[in-house]
Length: 380
Ligand code: RFL
Ligand code: PHB
Image 1: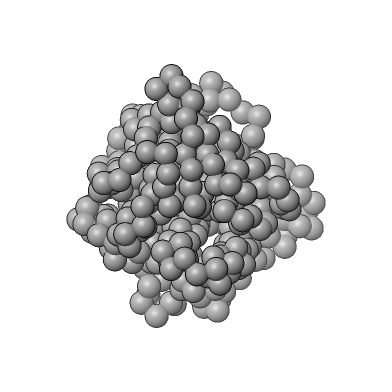
Image 2 (image 1 turned 120 degrees about the vertical axis):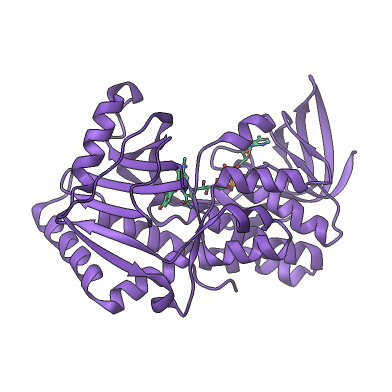
């Protein structure tokens, strides 16, 4: 294996789905992944698949388990001032919904379907946009893979973006982070709750009828050691407090992590033989649940262009993908700003934020705008 049509760096959702879509169109490809299969399959991350993502996974034959085990959600709840406000997706978007199905499961499904070469513990060291040569380390030795095209699906910390000779980056860091937990307890709600409290944001999500996924806005300098189980549950309870007899159920915490929040875009997403897709090219704060979905949108577009092999389609990839990326960037930024508590905010800005939150809850037009972006705009 020294030559392939498309060399793919990274076996996250972007790389695995791209490999699958290309193989289905008869395009020879190789995936290199630096970590172990075990690690890749158990990394806790996204949970919400937008309608397009569900459609793409179904259409390429990767949706069978998702359709059995995923939970279709028809809305979310916004919670603030101790009140609940529902955003109903089908009525606001012409029938669209989202699916709660974990990224870990999407990744497992795509790995199980993989027939072509997929090398774990194979770390790409360099990718040359001019020649298409990828150097990588595997089995104690260094190797070369010659590719007609290279797609860096290697996430935010990969090597692909750095190999682009001229790139412009746009970035915003937020003065808060998310502490995420997985708990063995049935969700205390049927739909996701996005809560704003003067002490900060909280999100109640889920993985199954028996497993809850919850997030708390924390200081980015906080360490996991600062947050005992009791402190986490107490803080969640405070931020989700609502009039009436709703109760947050507690259970054993099985996984926890703290994630910084940033917005980031790199332009363009192609130079000669090298393409960027997914988190390698852009990051959104997770409040809009867009990261995984953008990765899927990128590679859906790219698979079509690479399989067609027409320079026009390949040329248009970056511009077409970036239009969607910037829409998702704006939506994610807006959801984040509307729902979190910014420690540096002036009292004036906090009044504006609360006004936006109340308007979103009260106005069908504002709710429709949120819903349309949340379920995902149609793929181009
Ligand atoms: P990934 O998943 O980071 O995969 C990149 C892969 O590349 C490998 N790699 C290399 N392999 C070979 N050689 C090298 N030199 C390499 N360098 C890196 C890595 O090991 C890895 O396997 O990127 P990809 O495929 O672009 O997928 C992006 C998504 O993972 C990400 O956008 C989402 O998880 C973001 N996200 C969410 N997205 C949603 O759409 N909905 C959500 O509800 C949602 N929730 C979240 C999220 C991300 C979170 N965190 C932890 C960042 C919640 C959280 C808390
Ligand atoms: C999740 O379930 O992990 C999740 C859900 C919605 C978000 C972010 C993460 O906005």
